[in-house]
Length: 391
Image 1 (cartoon, rainbow, N blue to C red):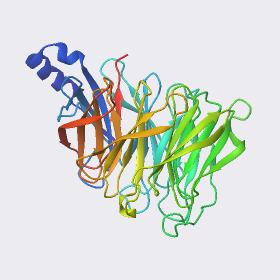
Image 2 (tube, rainbow, N blue to C red):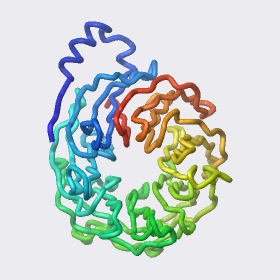
Image 3 (cartoon, rainbow, N blue to C red):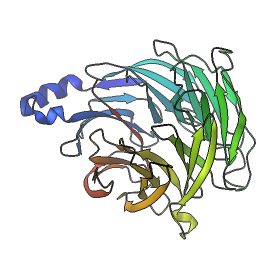
């Protein structure tokens, strides 16, 4: 894993050109994860100007690492955890997880550790509420061995320890091609940290665990009293997001391009609404993916890939978390795997994986609606975007 650090060079050039002006005070650093089968080198650290909506094309730092497809930041942004989505037939056939330290001033990344995920194509990770464990979702494209949830202890220094627990469940087999085995797509904790929810595209279920590392540090997850929630047959659960108050949750379903809305309490998800992203459209338009809420909790944004290639904007009912569609907006590219709202709330950055670009779109914070495209930055196979917010 090689690192190239452009920080000193850029600082010398940028201060001379702009000085430490107001524009620099409105700049944030952006981390970009990519797939590396093509020309991408791995993980990029870049500057983003929230006054203009422009990403600086010259990276501050490039870390050469295989397929860093999902990025997880600790709450204090002192650590970064990266899944290396490797598998059979790739340059590195072994699924891995890497951890990095983040310099509090420069935001430069330094490798701490790398371990195996004990599964193929790890596609997502999340930290436990107490930051002592990392939950890694091994998607596994191939039917054998299938997908698994892996639990890795994390040291206080950010060092990853080997997997201590793995979990897998039978597939639904509704879709004989895509659901012949289980495919764990993401795993997240409840807002209070007491429960863990694992979304399995291959099983058409959300599996629920109690998290109690004090009782048994080697097996911190045990099935909850309500151990799973069944979703529509062939829907393919992908990503789950809780509301800021912890009372509601939203789940994207990749294969049916739908969003399920839940009430949430004490480890139990109760579905209250099911919303179509591509109602009445052909199957080729259905590929639900990422979802993110605005910082004020008023709007939900969901990407739909396929041939639709849209961001769908919803208003959120504050009383029950239910959704009302406001807008469908083209991503001006192909396959929006992930996206991010910038810290100012004025822009949405979209990682269009198959058209090899990051697209920056204006956002109206009051109405939630997306406006004009302000930048299309070439970037080979971008997969995830995370902002580093000044501390």
